[in-house]
Every structure is written in C-alpha cells, then in structure tokens.
Image (cartoon, rainbow over the protein chains, first blue to last red):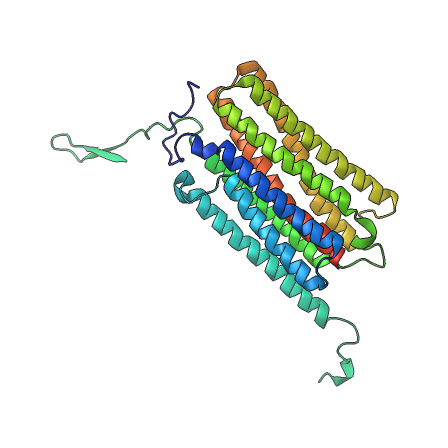
Length: 125
Length: 208
C-alpha cells in the first residue's frame, strides 16, 4: 500500500477512482452481459422479421456496449491525463469513421458502377 | 525554461535549466493509451477491408454456411468473464493483496486461453471444411481480422504470464502496478474490439 498514490501529479483522477471500484466493474459487467445477450438472441431467433432493422438494432447495441466498456472498464473520462486521452480518443474516432465510411462508400460505388453490362460501351461518345 | 545571468559589462548569458523531475512512468499511461489508439486504427483498416470484401464469396461458402453462433456466444462470454476477472485483479492490486491479485490474474489467463482454444477450434473446423483463407476474399479478410484479434489475445496472455512471474519475484512494486495497469487497458481494449468483431462479422454475417 505504501507505494500507491504518490508521485502521480499528472491529472489522474485521484485515489482508487482511476482504477474503478467493485461496484463499477460489476455494473459494467452486467450491462455488457445484457447488451451482448440481446443482439445474439435477436439474430439467433430472428425475433425481428426485417433483417435491415435487426442489423441497425444490433449496431446500436454494439455502440452502446463500446461506450459501457470505455466508461466502466477503461475508465475513460474527460479528466484523465488532463484531457489528453479523451482528445486522442476523439481524434482516433474521427479517423476510424473516415476510414470505414470512406472505404465502404467508395468501394460500394465502384462495385455498383463497374459491373459488366451496366454500361453499354456503344452508347458512350 | 531559460534564466539569465548578467555579468558586468558582458552580454547576458543564457543557461538552459534542468527540466523539473518527472516521476518515473508518469506519462506511461498516456503513452500506452496512444499506442492503443494506433492499434485501434489497425483494426479500423481490417474492419474496412472486411466491410468491402465480406460479400465476395467467389461461389464459396457464405457466413451462414460456416458460422456457429452458439460457439461465438460462448467465446464472447469467455472474453467478457476475463474482463471482469482482470478488473477484480486490479481491485485486489489496489488493496496490495499479492496472492489474490495473482489468483485473479491466473483466472483471467485461463479465460483468455479458453477463448483462444475455442477460436482455434473454430478456425480448424473452417479449414477442415475447405473454407481456407485462400478460398475467397470474404474468407481472406475474415481470417485476417479475427486472426489479428486472436494474435493480440495471444500476446496479451504471454504478457500476463510475464507479469505474474514479475509479481511473484518482486511483489506489487510501483513498476509492476504500472505494468499491470497497462495490461489492464490492453485487455479491456481487446474486449472492445471483440464487440465490433462479433457484431459486424458474426451477427451481421448471419443476417446477410
């Protein structure tokens, strides 16, 4: 216990808060269980007839669960490391969104427009 | 910081002051977090590749023919259990209880091993059925994405065992606490990536 909690003057949330608490881990665990079980149940039983709707619903569950993990397991908050870890996270998320949406968007249109037979070459000028 | 010392009749002389002392490892957590963010970008690329190529079956097997969601659910549970047990290891570490910390770390490692075993069983099963990485673009990107995650878990377990030896030899000293906190972030981060994997690869694959 002696070595704990000193020489950490770098804006780390003080004391045990940075490592979380038993209650925090338990809340995160129970929430994760629920947020995992529901999407699996939805897909395995086909509870929602429309596949598009099911896909959107399980994506929302995934997004919520990622936030739960970030908060309760990784102890993300705006104060840790003087805000720098949050800034790095936001920057990374922007890059991830650009990479994912950009790739899917561009490649989908490439696929859709480059299909043989879609454009008749004789109609080209 | 710069201080000036003016001696009579001469130009001012500038001395660079020694930077104030940083506690050892004071910036490790932020640095490790930045590493995790760059790792996150690697996975973003692999997810993007899977997103683009995931529908190219080359007349081969599709996710519906290959994946067993019961197995994936079991796998997900293993990783989730290992996350909570690592959390308990951190809590007992805060209380300075060496034996309890080691115990929880061992349990975490066993859950990690269970996860890996199930994943390798699944891979072996797929390859046995002829669904090898060479079969189609879908399978190439699938094995790359899920395999990279599995590789991370493998190295996480190697790291975990290393730290258990460290703690056994030197106890819960400041350096070991810092290392355990880094591994904690790494481990929970892998669980976050797995959320993406089971949602986008397995669950959405079954919906296609």
